[in-house]
Each structure stands twice: as structure tokens, then as C-alpha cells.
Length: 62
Image (cartoon, rainbow, N blue to C red; front, side, top):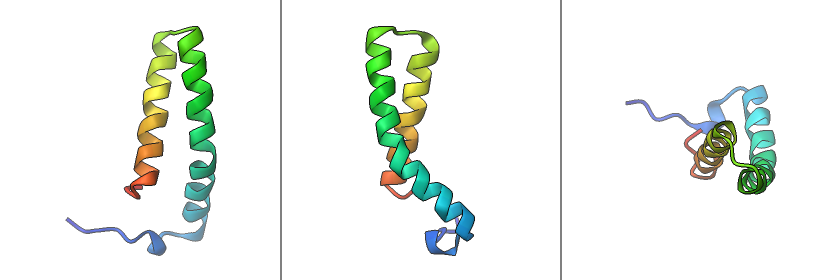
């Protein structure tokens, strides 16, 4: 399996990743508060996806 180097990404993709890294944690916090106050299936799934994206960015998987 080929290992990807994040510095070989196109500049626009690196910009999108940096923007996502800045906004992912605040969105997770907001969605967590919203899920605690008014839990719906959509809110729980959205929170799970946001947490997975934040973890992937933190561990530099994407």
C-alpha cells in the first residue's frame, strides 16, 4: 500500500485541510451541546462523523 505524503497534495487541498482542521473542533463542541439538549438520530450521526474527521485530521490520516 502506497503511503501518501501530505506535502505532495495540491495547494488547494492543503488549504481545505487546514480550514477543516480549524473549524472541526468548534463544530464538534457545538454539535455535542446540541445533541445533549435535543438528541435526534441525525444529530448523533453528524456528531460521530465530525469526531471521525477531527480524529483523522489530528492523526494525519487525511
